[in-house]
Length: 107
Length: 163
Image (cartoon, rainbow over the protein chains, first blue to last red):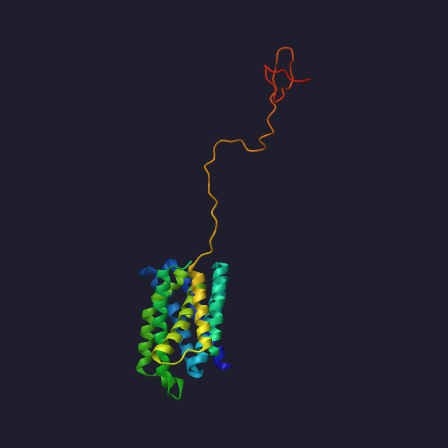
């Protein structure tokens, strides 16, 4: 259970970094690098290191499924919350991918 | 909608990310504690390689969005797991893995093909008055000797109106 919580926390850090950088797409010029790069690097590396820790604790197949499922769920939720518009076909596609990830863990 | 070129881009980025994941797993394996495991040179190399692919991931997220982009990345991870198991590790693909791969292919097809919409053909309009064509305007006609008489729409000088 502890490893699952660590994996979810890791995913929140990674998705938080992605959402942060998506909102600042207009600041990608070199002179604006100092405004967003340190925070992005810190949150993303924190997430990746937590992910490594969960990978160390969990069995490989279980970790892969947990990471993929949490990445899709958390990212889609954050995307919708941030005003990203997904068509009904895209929503169905995301659900299919999520189902595929879960089915992969069975076999 | 995702284009084929974008799909190829996402596939390459996910390939690099999956390769780094496998590299980290192999390096972590066999160590007793987590801190001793990440104190090796591999961890610095892993951090540098993550930094190298980060700009491409940022581009992916900003171009294709968080929902679509991440879902497609994970879709490719399912396919890579199947392909890696069969081609590299010479494992037999289970029924569940085949179903998962089929679902991913279906999902990618859904994202690649937009829903067909009907666009109405716009005909250049001419100056035609709107409204009921049978309802014609009644114009008051002032005739000699019949001041203020309202003319019928069918009234004409050659054909006297019926009384």
